[in-house]
Image (cartoon, rainbow, N blue to C red; front, side, top):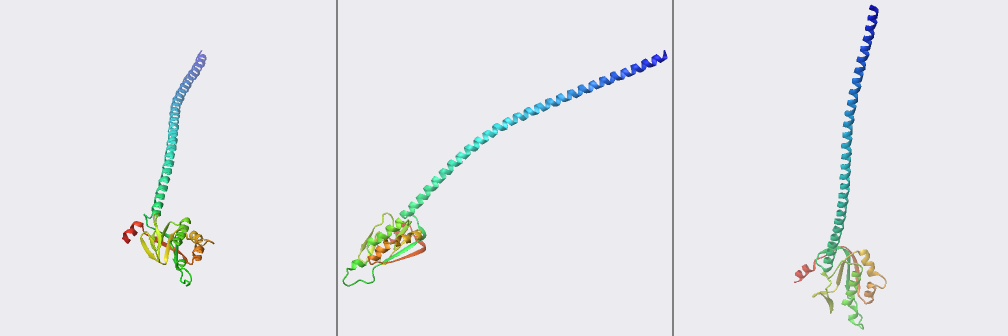
Length: 234
């Protein structure tokens, strides 16, 4: 009988241990499952927030692209307007220079016209002196060749200038000048000089008319505004 009790006691002891171990194991599994569920919920919430942030960022990025395109269009428009205004100002300055409102200086040429030093007794003296037609030939050729400004003996010409010959002198805008008549022109010498010296051109025609002609390239020619010249002459 005592042996049976001992065996039963051992059986109940082992059974109790197994039950206790099984209970503890089940408890730990449930605990682990609960923790995993909490972590999953937290991860899901984090992912949801991240997705919302990505959607917001995408919307903001699209708005940024639109704003950048608008700014680019505005900049292009301002650039075009700026170029138009710049061109207008440049044209105005150029026209003011042409009409003589602005002082001007630059490279150019200087053409001197003189009467013939010798007149045969049998010839008409008028065929050996400088006339306004000779001066007009030079001036027209200079303007055609791109001269920016022209003066005669320091008298700057404008679109309303008048020139006529009166014996041994010429009158330019009411001011008389004796020979030699020095025509100064601001412009590119490499263009102006060949234009004057072209075969059969102005220089050849003046030489044929017994006019003494000399052409010089100048590094700098200065011309005052017409208003300043008028004040000085008055």
